[in-house]
Length: 248
Image (cartoon, rainbow, N blue to C red; front, side):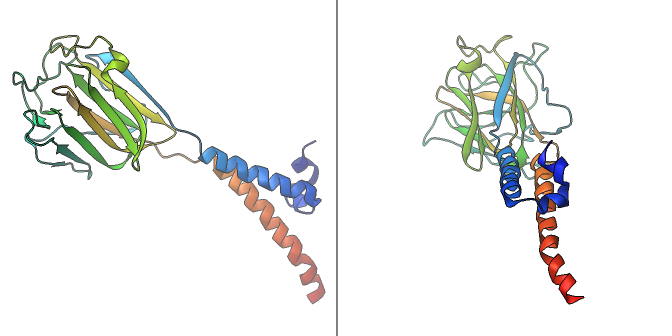
């Protein structure tokens, strides 16, 4: 027989303190422990694949509307910015097409170079400051090469990272079919608000960028908090009852 079934909820408030206090502590600890669950970062890399967000996410596309090194603002408030090392011959920017020695368009699932605008890090970085926390991020990672890195942050804290070596240790920057991968990255139990693409070797080209917001859900601690509130409420009524009887 459990303590609650023996005394009932408000009856539990009249139970000996040796029962009530430990239970309240355990209930509150259970709720706070669930809230502190560690987020889990994972991803898939598919040769010339496509976006594959989880069901229920609100997905937004972040294809550059133009080209150049200027910052890009999107309708939802997300901003993409470019940072370049001083006097770099390989600047980070939004580009289109291919330019020998600088960047090459990623190859899509049909085996063709994408015709839309895309991003190139050069020897710098491309940073996405997301307008709201996201749990999914997808992109077509072109001509994958050693030195390319994609890092995810939440409030300035690193929560996940992917390098080319993680999914293709033999990557050599191939610009043809088989050299591009679609990355579908997820952060379960958490969200990120910043994504930074960088490369230590010439360039990291990527396009078809999408991100998805985590669906709204009722947090697990809610039921525990309600139980604790009920027990505390019953305890208050118990303390007031003698005073009311004396007043009558």
